[in-house]
Image (cartoon, rainbow, N blue to C red; front, side, top):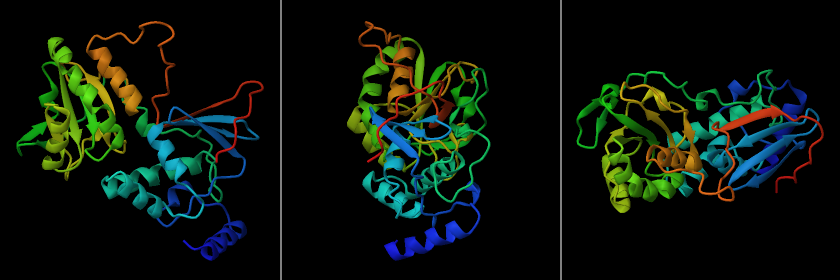
Amino acid sequence: MAVEELTDVLEETADGEEMSAEDIDGSFVPRIRPEVNGVEVDGEAVLVIEGPWSIHWLNQISTVVFDELDGVSTVDDVADRLSRAFQADPEVVRNDVLDLTRQLGRGGFLEGVAIEEIQYTSPSNEGLPVGTAVPPFELSDLTGQTVTHEDLQGRQTLLVNWSPHCSFCGRIGPEIAELQPKLRARGVKTVFISIGSADEVKEQLGEFGLDVPVFLQETDRAEIFDGMGTPVAYLIDAEGKTASELAYGSDQVPTLIRAAAGISETNGADKKKPRRSKKTSGSKKAGGSRKRVSAKG
């Protein structure tokens, strides 16, 4: 969008009422409010809104999207850049960018968008409570055979939401392959629910030396991961119920997989990493005085 066009949009917003986050579409230009400050830590972002002093977290995927919000590009522009940069499914990326933009609007981050009373959270990424049955689905595997949620029953399963175009998935793929012998020794099966074509997935897994069942979401979607990014994962018990909380991102998913493989994360206090939020984004009110983080560049 040209600068002149952006100026017109700003004037229209100033003269009119703030829009609802639900009305945001692909033509919307996200502009971060000036009172929002933030800093990145290990690829994740910590955001602070001055005034009410709310502190918010964005995971790695959301941080990548947030960094692309330049105040000039539309939602569709941002999605197009990211899908080309990561060679990802354009529709999936657009949905993710649109979803995050609406969340930012609800939480008070964006100019021209009405803040909602509900705190800025991502309900779809809170995950299912432990002990919840996997919602029914019917997909195809890499051979074209029909598979359903019932195929997860009978043994513990690591169920991973995957994409062959996801750079974060590519980052953790080799470790998942390396852990397969330990997982199988403990009776744990690994299953990917993936977007993309069978050929794309086969090629990528072949590069990792990873041989796991893959259920494809080419046309239908599995409700358990509906609206979520990649990678995310659950441990599923032998009865087809969630046996863990949702693991989100390239830090938490390997942690869950290592735990399922019987590998302890505490190999010394100096190596133990602090626990991160499992949500795409979260928030809480700051208590007392807090050091102000540096402004986002």
